Length: 332
Ligand code: NAD
Ligand code: DAU
Image: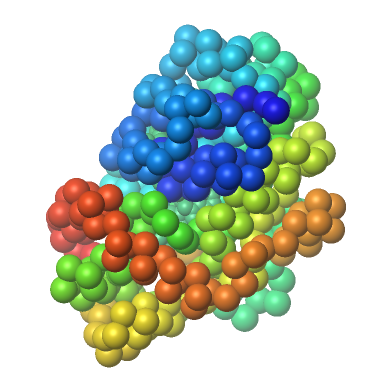
C-alpha cells in the first residue's frame, strides 16, 4: 500500500485516474488541485475521505508542494492548463502552470528523492499528414504547434533534464485524445453532446477533416498505473488505443446516437494553426508492460459517455453558459 500525490486530480483525466486507483488498488490519494475553471470538486464527491485527502492549492506554490511531497511515496502530475483554444487567446496561465508548476514539482521530488510520473500529450510531436503511414513513436522529434502544446513540450524537457542532471526518478507518458465522464464542456465531444441536450447545434471547426486518436480515459488511467508500477525510470511511453477518427465523423456519430439527423450541425471558423492529425504507436507500452486497452469499441464508449452527460446535468450545466459565451465571442 502506498500514498500517491495526484496533481490536477479534480480535472477530467486526473479525476478518472483517482477513481481508477481507488477502485483497483489499495493506495491512498492526496489530490492537489487549484480548482481553476476546469477543476471540479464534485468529480471526486463519491470517494471516501478515508482514502482521499483533497488540498486546494497551486502546483507552483513551492512551500505547499514541498510539504505534500514529504507525505507521499509517489507523485502523478496531471495539473495543467489543457485547452488549445484558451491558449490561443491567453497563453500566460499555460506558462505559469505547465512550465513553472512542473519545475516546482521537480524541485520538490528532487529534494526528497520521490518517484514522479509526468502526464503529457501527443501534441508535443506536432501533427501528421492524413495519409502518413508512420505514427508518433517515442523517437518522433518534438514539433509543437500551439502555446498549450509548446508549454507541455517544455515541461517534458524539464523532466528529462531533471532525470539526467539530478537523477530524479521520473517517467513520462504522452497520450492521445481522451473521452469519457467528467470532461469539461469546452472540449470537442462534451461540447457537442451538451449542445444537443440543450437544443443547440453542434459546431465543427473548418471542414472537420482533422483526425484525433481517441482513447477512453479509463484506459489512459490503467496505462499510467502500469508505468508508475513497472515503467523504467527515465523512459517515455506513448499511450494510445488505435482510435483514429476524423472530427466530422465523430460529430455525425454523436448526432445519430442522440436520435438527430447526422447533418444537423454548423461549420464554424477553424482553429488557428489547427493540427491536422495525431496517431499513436503504443507498441513499447504494450510489449514492455503488457498493457492493453479495455474500451475497443469507440461507438459503445461514446454511447456510455452520452448517457453520463444525460444523467449528470448538475455536474456540467454550471459551466455551459460561460463556455458558449467564450466561443460566441471568438466566432466558434
Ligand atoms: P483539465 O483541464 O480537465 O484539468 C486540469 C486540472 O488541473 C483542473 O482540475 C485544474 O483545476 C487543475 N489545475 C490547473 N492549474 C493548476 C495549478 N496551477 N495548480 C494545481 N492545479 C491546477 O485537463 P485534462 O484534460 O484532465 O488534462 C490533464 C493532464 O493530461 C494535462 O497535463 C494534459 O496536458 C494531459 N493530457 C490530456 C489529454 C486529453 O485528451 N484531455 C490527453 C493527453 C494528455
Ligand atoms: O491529443 C491530446 C490533446 O487532446 C490534449 O493534450 C489536450 O489537453 C486536449 O484538449 C485535446 O486537444 P485537442 O485540441 O485535440 O482537443 P479538443 O477537444 O479541443 O478538440 C478536438 C478536435 O475537435 C480538434 O481538432 C478541434 C475540433 N473541435 C473542437 C471543438 C471544441 C471542433 O471541431 N469543434 C469544437 O467545438
